[in-house]
Image 1 (cartoon, rainbow, N blue to C red):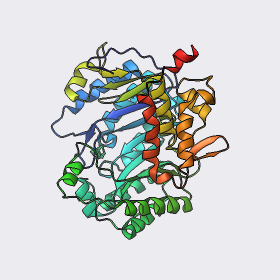
Image 2 (image 1 turned 60 degrees about the vertical axis):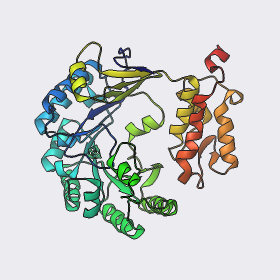
Image 3 (image 1 turned 180 degrees about the vertical axis):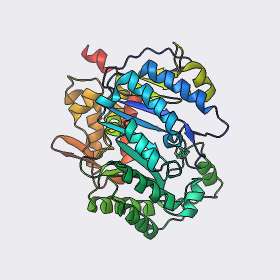
Length: 405
Ligand code: SF4
């Protein structure tokens, strides 16, 4: 990996998906490890001007999908959103090309007018961060909205004409009972969301939640309890017509998030904004995680990249499996070779298949119609099973390019 002031040397081909990172929030949630900061006291206008400059410099033409995340994009005013979406349209013509344009929203900053404006600007899909339906949990999370505000935001978005709505939820919270989660999810289902993202709470490094966990102030649920939440959630959402297409993502037929599916298929993407990561060809780049430095560099020829790396063939293969196994329909060996840039390989050359076969013997993976996927027994262990494939990146085997070249 090259760090610090890496030169930009990527040109993403037309149709490459675009991720736009808007780093401002109303407040910092206690569990969140994204690069996001409370907007108050920040140079919001200066940062948006820098993002606009980066949009104009780096957005590929005609992206297939656009995802505006953060941070809390809905926190911006309608004129600010107009400026950013206008720059995106000028640079890429996304309104004529993108089949899906998602904007992440929080209940405190989403009303009918904002939803209407986002639709007019080209959004096709809104994702609303409910996270919890209990006011004491929202408080523990550091969220600034109330429970009823989440419902009002959802209904306002529907009334404004948003046809594709996601609700984001976190479960297996400290002290939460399965019965509470069951009744909360029923309330969400009564809204008829097209997509639900339901994440098992994690205690990420460098978050308040992690510190509180280490201090014993937060008590996580037991593994068995988490498993019970996991299975119940999958079964209930499937029964409600929203099957899992990924470990934590559930949707009506045809409503999966195409932008995120591209990540899990290890596809290319261009990330714009502070901290945003891009993958072009087999090279990855990351922007600086510092607002002042981002503002200084985003419009310059050198760009705002802080690091770049080109993973080895083995790493690419391992990552392709690690990501692909998150999807319910898994992946085939030939897809993995293609995505990792190893087309033309045969099974005998593929060490990932040795790992897959071992996981199959343990009952964690199954091979169905040429596709490897997690089994019923493997789903709860998804992270651990998928991580086995990342070990390929530490392999000292000779590079396969040298072997075949
Ligand atoms: S609103 Fe979202 S991005 Fe902002 S701090 Fe909370 S979880 Fe993180």
